[in-house]
Image (cartoon, rainbow, N blue to C red; front, side, top):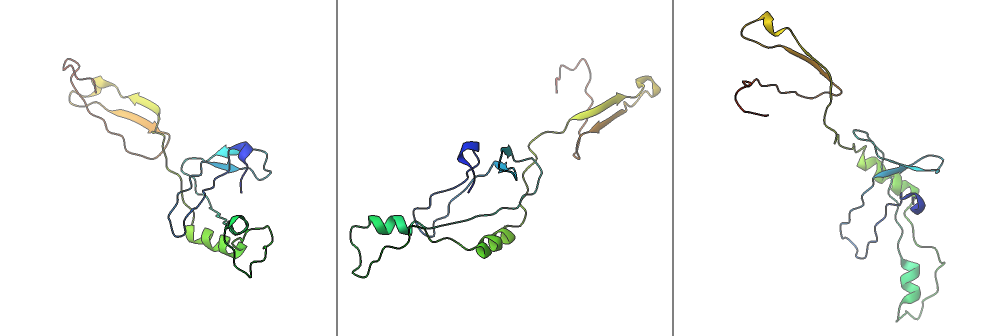
Length: 144
């Protein structure tokens, strides 16, 4: 169920049956439960979702009860481990997005006097992507 002290509790109160709800998860608890770390970009995660109803709370607080009402044990009805695992399998391994731009890790300009009609640039990036280069005249006033 997470750990509220580590800001790693991701839950949503569902007040109406069959209503879609959204739960955002941005941290993952360490195995030893000592800390929670931010989800990493471009990383696949397995998702486990657990649910329980509020039957015990709702039944005890009901204004009108059935003649045959007997207080249920104080534990709520919970989904089974098999249901949790089936949901996890159906969800697959969602992957977080890459939200960081690439970085040029190397940039070299070949000798511009080697040819009258071209400039050759060599570079490397820290991730796969596409780089676009365009030449403009230095006296054109263009900045980008």
